[in-house]
Image 1 (cartoon, rainbow, N blue to C red):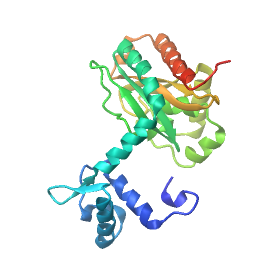
Image 2 (spheres, one colour; image 1 turned 120 degrees about the vertical axis):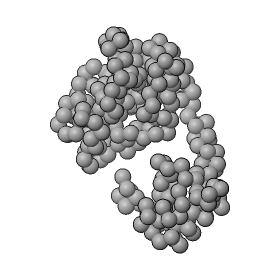
Image 3 (tube, rainbow, N blue to C red; image 1 turned 60 degrees about the vertical axis):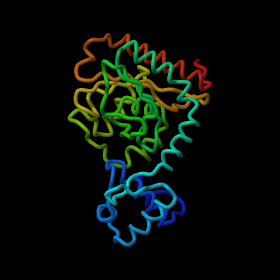
Image 4 (tube, helix red, strand yellow; image 1 turned 135 degrees about the vertical axis):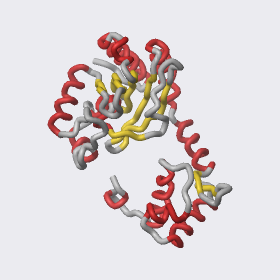
Amino acid sequence: MTIEQRPGTTIQSVARALTIIKCFEDCTELGISELSEQMGLSKSTVYGLVNTLAVFGYLEQSENKKYRLGLKLFELGNVVRGRMDIRREAHPWCRMLADKYRTTVHLAVPSEGEIIYIDKVDDTSSVVVYSQIGKRAPMHCTGVGKAILAFLPQDYLEKFVFSRPLKKMTDRTITSREKLLQELETVRQKGYAVDDEEIEPGLHCIAAPIFNHRRQPQMALSVSFPYGRLWDIQWEETARDVLYYARQISERLGYIED
């Protein structure tokens, strides 16, 4: 959802400042000219915004006179992480799953049609490079995303997923409404979702939703097997394990199964 699409009153200068911060998601350092080009604003306007962010510590200037994210964002990020008690609760289960299958385990939460990875546990023998804590990805082409979407109400799909084209990430990405709805029905029947090279070639995932005490999908857990590793495991056994560990975490959230 863009700034213009968000409900309620927005302050243009604040929105622009926050957009500047987002420009650094894919670039370590940026100069005023580069930010001006990306934002479509004059250099003088961008400089004023950047200087204000720097004064408050959200940006800082490097030795080459360009700007990078400041330590204030790191401090605030740690405050948010400290509030994520469930992340600490879930981490031991993620570690056990990663150790058992010698692979990468993800924990992710939904955010307006995307998922955000809030934890990633790697085994030294198998590391998934694509993901990292804090990174976003589309829900329709990730195992964790589909595991959550399958148990969300239809109006969520209409508002955050089907309101825009389904982005094609690989040749296997589901890009039609009908196929995605069919896929989500399969997820509901099995209880778990799969990502069959849909977000990155060679990457396979098995994911299960984690429910809160209201029986709502609050997050999802997945195991990822890159570049052929999937054929070394027993699919159904792994799926059962993912479901089991997801259920254990759900119970920590107060979920009671029928």
